[in-house]
Length: 332
Image 1 (cartoon, rainbow, N blue to C red):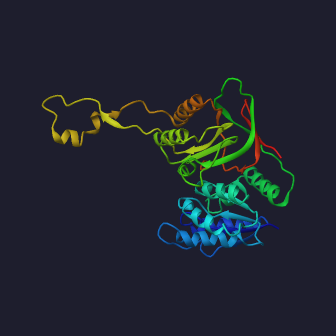
Image 2 (cartoon, rainbow, N blue to C red):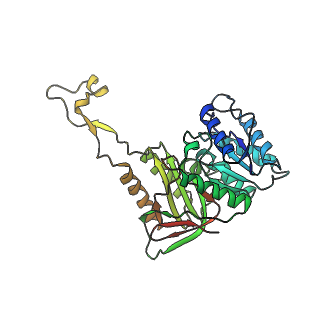
């Protein structure tokens, strides 16, 4: 039996959804211990930054826990990193498995690179649909956990991705996978905890950022060298990342001068988008194809992870093969 400790590292955790998720884990044979801070509240968070870090460290140093699972995402996980770094200068916790995604991206990259932990980009217990995940998604996650914790054989899931940009001569990439949420990965730039994609397949996903902001983050990441040496870029779900377009005056009133009231609050009848709005997938392809071309970086989309309807998992730090036809698969 695998013993799991659940911690709340980011935003306040929804009680009912979380309890359903915990019961689902128990029903599937896991022994679960929930930290006492998980269902508390301190402003935006379950507890102060320091207390959330202490909770994480409490479970990290527990020899009887084989895995830690983040209760949910949101925001605030990056606040814990200085506390974790300071505490682990004297002694690092023994290797464990850490599961989560979204805001947990920062913690997972820290634990993987600083402590040598195994990490799985996986749905979290407070996800409303966690207890009813489709069989294919749930069994794939269980297999990855068993593979990492119990050393059971891996049954790789083969994903079929859609190419956005393929440089001349590209046939396949074989490399460890890193990454997670684009906003969080980008926010680590300029800090001691920056993620490094050189020699890796970088996986990114996002939710609720319009394509203009996505494009801005990508240019920032690019100009800071964040794609330098990367073997390929794979996109998960970019949920509700729409092309939002400014509304502008398209025609003036028929008679008289343009008055202050007209300019301050023009009627809807004279307003229209400044340009044609792109459908979300077209906008995604437009932005990432340009990125691929500038960097001669293979770019593929369609990995069913993140904040979309499907919640498959990815074993971060482990080698995967990405072929020119879009086949993407983990290897032992």
